[in-house]
Image (cartoon, rainbow, N blue to C red; front, side, top):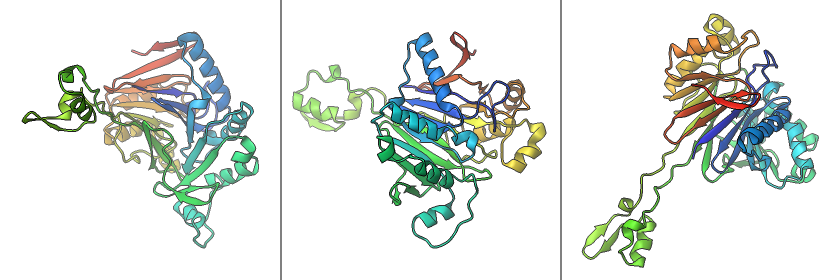
Amino acid sequence: MSIEIHILGTSSARPAQGRSVSGSIIEAEDGIFVVDCGEGFQNRFVEHRSLLKKSDGKKLKISKVAAILLTHGHLDHTWGVLPWLQTMAMDTRKEPLHVIGPTSSEVIDVLLGKDGEPEVSPSDLIIQYDMWMDLGAVSEELGYEIKLILGDGSRWVDMNTGEKIELPQPLNKTKISAINTQHTIPSFAWKIESKPKRGKFDRKSAESLPQEIVMQLAEGKDVDFEGQVLKGSEFRGPDKKSISVVISGDTAEQAIETKCDLLIHEATFLQEHSDIANEHLHSTASGAARTAIECEAKHLALTHFSARLENGEKSLIEASEIHSSVVTLSDGDRLILDLDCNLKHLQKSSEGWTVNT
């Protein structure tokens, strides 16, 4: 099973150069995650879904969205959340939905009962969550179960109940992890990882054995039979390994401390503007490539471009001097990472998608 990523926004801060603001769909084996949800996201989702059905016969069901994973609270990454929640309510959604994002450790302390008044940025998600709940983003108003979760990377609070919880895992076959990054407000990168699977049991190789023995071997047990040990592992095909994608929000370079197969990383600036990138805790294309090297990522995809960049050509050249497998993304592009960690980059056209070779 592959992981497919649909890129619905590649612009930094505001729509520019034909690009929309941040928002991506991560299509896993057993459901969908949305990473960031800037203004107009639901319109882009509907248009993308329509073209997918027309060109590929493929369906993206909103009911399969298990969680909206926010990288931070800047509005170009969050302003589309509340309208989409309300649209789901009008569409009579029944499936539960998680909205998960970062805040500071000081805010988490207060939410868990510690006295104090933490200094909170106007862009901190705690402010937006409170606003969303005041405007009806609660289960009783929406008609479906919604859980608004805030965390600092190690502690998590359910804003609906005020209780400390573990990071939710809404899907059974896919794991999510939050990695703290460096930006002007609390920020995460999100790691989406398929869970490894045991190889398929080979019934043909065990067909001559008694059924009771076959059942034990199928469970992975080693069995004593007629004076010899039959190893359960020898009756299975190769295990299916895990594959992983990390997608950053806004972050300084070399701030993601995890390994992954595909890194989707912001590249707001070119190296010639590294002073601006450093001042605002953003990354350059070469900085994203250095981050990919540290993450041991087999592939790097660049996104979140400044309005001063007409296209991604210079970013691609700059990053490719450091990393051997780089693509630059445009709105509507798709990335498919297969179980062998091969990456297919599908570029959007008016009629559908073509493979970038």
